[in-house]
Image (cartoon, rainbow, N blue to C red; front, side, top):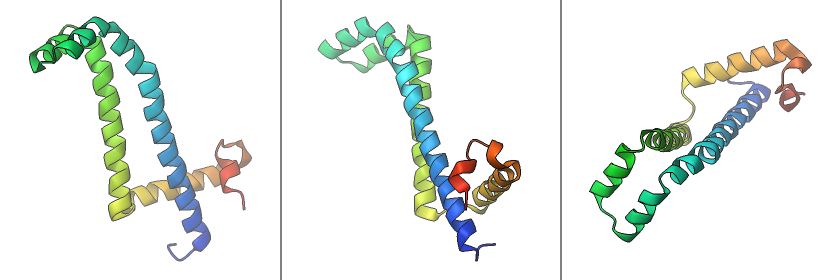
Length: 123
């Protein structure tokens, strides 16, 4: 299976699409969640801009829990995608991830033109 250059190319293309999809999801999270969270904290941000203290930052986050959760989600999501992509770049795709991509390719080919990603894998 690893000797097939066509399969390797398809696996790399699907992996590339997965990377783009994850970064697109991170971008959407930042565009959708971060602006309202920061807007809700605008007064505290102005104060922190003048007199930054760690206690002031903790106060701002503690009294705006939804903003803190939204920002933590954005930061955590970004960090997780960075770690995932860095691991794949440094150590290559793990066997489990490779098998998941192969199974996904089989499902795409089985479904044919009805699958939204089918046009990316036509011969």
